[in-house]
Length: 441
Image 1 (tube, helix red, strand yellow):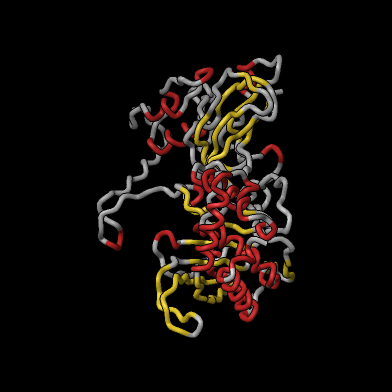
Image 2: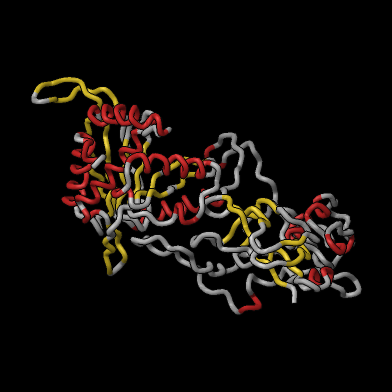
C-alpha cells in the first residue's frame, strides 16, 4: 500500500511551513534517513528526512509553496514491489483537509512551558483548522474523469481563471503542475455556467495606504510571523516591570584581556557577551526567586540556569540557548555561543538548541545603543537588556572620575517576580560584573 508523506511538525509551535526545496524527484529511491526536502519552519530552515524506504511516486506540493499545513500530504511513496504509477494515483484529492482520513482536525496545538530539563522529542503538532486558503476541489473533464493536478496548480488556475481541462500536464503521469498553469493564458477556457473568479488585484507599489508614501509589499516569513504573534501576546498579557542599574566594566574588561592571553593557545577568544551570559547565570543562582516562570495556578522554580541569547539572523530574531550556564566555564560558554550563533545565522539550528530557556539576554551594545527595555520571551519571566559600555563620569572610591559604564535593564514578569527580588538580581549582576573573579570560580 503506498505511503503518504505528510508535512511534518518540525517544532512544537509549527502549524504550517514553506516547502523551500525538494531534494528528490518522482522515480527516486530513498532509504530511512535520506534527506528529501528543506522546509522553512516558524524558526529556521530544516532538513526533512525519510523514515521509510521506497520509491517517490509523486510530488503533491511543489517547492516554494507557502502556508502548507502540518499533516498535508506533500508526496507519495511506493513501497518495494508496488507499481509507482498506481501509487501516484492513490494521492488524496486537493479538497481533502490534512489528516482527513484519520478523523476531524483537533484543536490548535499550544506550545508547552519551559521546563528545567529540555524535551528530547516533541509530540507531533496537531493539525490546525482550515484557514480558507486550501486548493479548490479536484476538477473533472467533460467525461467526468478527474483531472490530475497538484493542489498548488489548482489554486493558481482558480485565481487566474484557467480551465485545467484545456491544459496538458508535464508532471508525472500527465499531472498538471505549477509551471503548466503559470504558462497558460487566462480567458482561454471555454465558457462555463459560473464565471471563474477574477484574479486578485496586485498591490500597487506606489501608494502606502493612509501614509500616502511609496511602498513595496513584502510577505512575512514564518519566523517574522511567530515573532509578531509571541511578542504581541507578551506585551498584552504579561505585566512588565523594568529595573535599570549602571555597571562599571573596567575590572571585567581587564579580566577578559588577561583570560584571552592565557586562552590564545587554545584558539578561544572570550567576548564581553560571554562574560555577561555567565554573570546573569550566576546572578540567578544567587537569587533563585527570579529563575521562575508563571504558569497559571503554579509557579515553576527552575534548578538550572538555561540562558537564551538573542541573535539577529537573516530571517529574524532567534534565541539559541546556553544550557546550565551557571556551571559551565567561560571557555565552554564562548565556544558554544560561537557555534550556536553561526548556526542561527545560517538557519541550521535544531529545535533542542532554541526551545526552552529559563531567562534571556539581549545585547545591543555593539550597535551603540545606550539603554533599552526588552520584551519578555514567554513563558520565561525575565530578560536582561544590556547597552554599550562607554566612558562616563563616575564616583570611584569616593572621588569623581571617569569609568567604562554600561546600563543594564531587567524586564520582569510582575506576576511571578516581585520588584524587590528583581532588584536583588540586578544588584547581584552588577556585583559580579564589577568583581568578575566570581565568574571564574
